[in-house]
Length: 117
Image 1: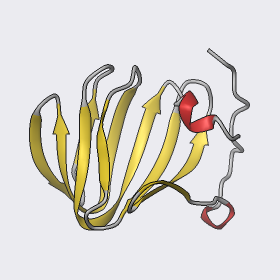
Image 2 (image 1 turned 135 degrees about the vertical axis):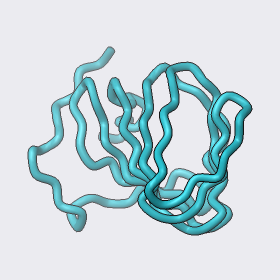
Image 3 (image 1 turned 45 degrees about the horizontal axis):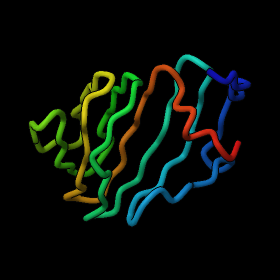
Image 4 (image 1 turned 30 degrees about the vertical axis):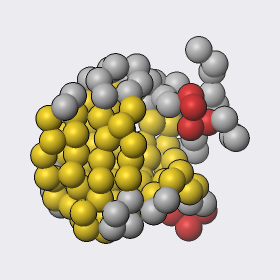
């Protein structure tokens, strides 16, 4: 695994650029070291996080909006204040039903998010 220099200790929203990652979906990588990563994701209504999997553990908090989330072929509607856990190597995806934000935490760092850094 490649080693990444940790993010700064203090990060300010205005200093971090949004990255478009799909139609109606963008993210900001907030903080990280090689063991953990914090990411904010904005979905417009109808935005899709396609079904995928990765070897990282993921915990996500729904800040706002409503999301139809599928984890390992089980689908639930999650809203503000809800959270979910995705184990490594499990298929998952989301469809945004009402515009909103998610906070994702990954362990270890998502190296694929760091390509342009």
